Length: 161
Image 1 (cartoon, one colour):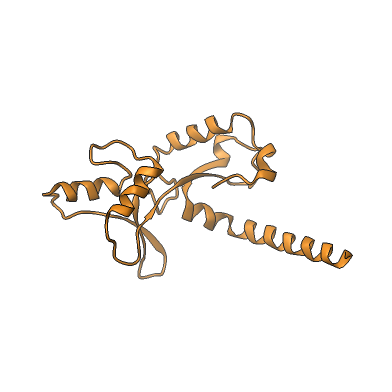
Image 2: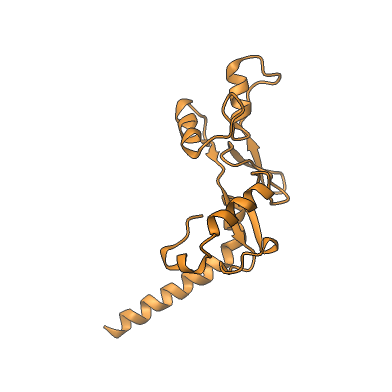
């Protein structure tokens, strides 16, 4: 997730290296126990019978008998047809190349979450490599509290004028 400008100073200067170490520790997969999606993988979230989401990568026909099937299988794990890891731009280009049924597939983007919500605390045990869905779900209450505080602050400023 992008770092808000007002929070940049809370991250250590070596944050890019720390982030890379966490993604490598996770083998470029979401560390959430119910996920495991690869960086820049393409697929959809499907709801299980119990209502919980499950990541479903795109797939070609099995067995993969055509180049398109092989390409689809690779896309589901964030790789090009030769097995090289994709960039975000390559994943976007792949999405534009095909006519998709609804819902349109998404691209998984791995983020690094601070379990205690303190960017200054970059101990490995406080960090998890998660896809955007699991990071946002984990941070939901924290985001709601911040939004409420922001609304209160705006209201207070409005009452001054």
